[in-house]
Length: 83
Image 1: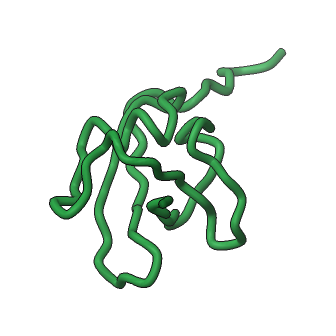
Image 2: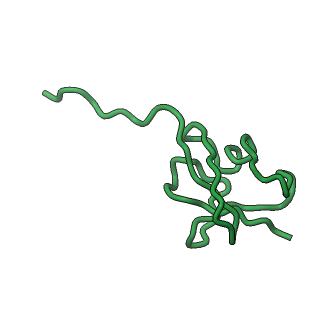
């Protein structure tokens, strides 16, 4: 007989974001199924940029995770503003 059960994570997840070339880090958070994009817009930390500009969120290796969920990637991610 199996005792107990495994349960998925409940609560909010916090992730670290920074802009390309900057050492300043910002925190975003949301439910595990919240997209990186939505979490960043919710707590937009960049006073020199507007959230309606073109931008994307990438991993250090360059993978675009803008539309992926917060639970899909751990570690610091980078916001790249596009021209």
